[in-house]
Image 1 (cartoon, rainbow, N blue to C red):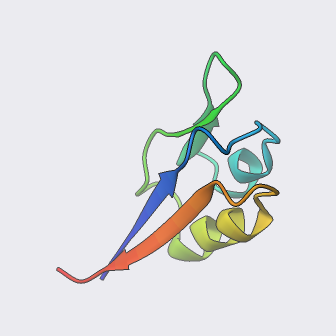
Image 2: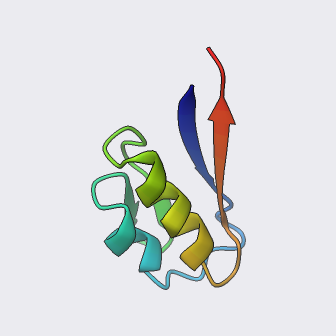
Length: 66
């Protein structure tokens, strides 16, 4: 099973919670909006914590079977 993070850039307000909780997987871009840089560099638990911490619900973490 794989964990795949997704970010709705329209909802993101750039609070940065996700960046601190899923370091290496999510960064803020030049516009201050969260973006996925390497979804495999954070653990599933870290990604789920980032999802829960997002004040606007811009992050979704999907569990996918291979």
